[in-house]
Image (cartoon, rainbow, N blue to C red; front, side, top):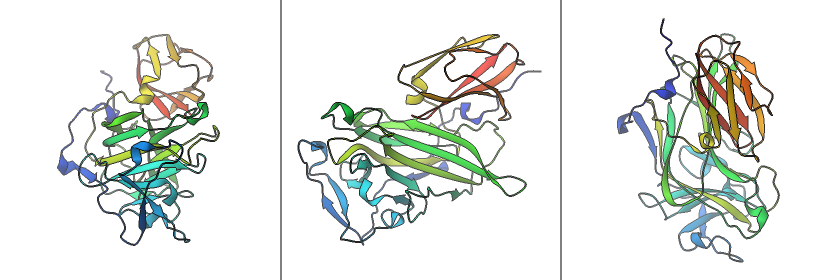
Length: 315
């Protein structure tokens, strides 16, 4: 019998507008006050004259009162006229010596404490859009172990009514001064599973790597975000480019190479049902799979930067 790879993410289709949900960040709350960004000590000159932050006015701005359909930390969100299309784009950034910035899909009055889980009416296959990622580099520590990310988690209630996490996908963005297309497919290990809810959030964070020179930093500009309800084509995203896995197919040993500064938290091999069939030592770069049955598997590597996954054929 032929082995059929059942992971939906390898299905390559172009998504149409009919099968996508688009967010252009054109509508901002009229009840909040926005003030122009001014630079201090050579900080973020590229935001002057085109970006505005929220003015607190001595009160608390609810995370869900800034953008329709989204929740954001008020101190880490801007609107900018430097858009990919239309009048505005959104900017997520760190603030106050590297405190995390979040923009999440859905309704949460305090998104720092609770990322929303949004009920799905159709199966979500991925998220795409356009981004810029700019950062100031006025000292060595301004860029050390800091980054901006997109996260997508899907969930489903089991037979006992307990919420379980089905998938966890992460994209780490590369710096770019021009709007660049990105996409992050959801890696369903079972093509037939349909999640009940999803969490989608963008994040700018310093990974506990110390302070920065500028009060605001690591600016992720976002525009024309699309939620895809048909399978999404897969580019090799930033996380994928950090690792090399060979040979593939293999019958015995998988060799793994990666940059020295990457810290692996878990290293697992998963079968097509989603079951973990092997846990490897996180320092091991020669993975013995000779005792496994022939077929397709996913090598799943969790790091502080995000998740890496690679389809493996054991023959």
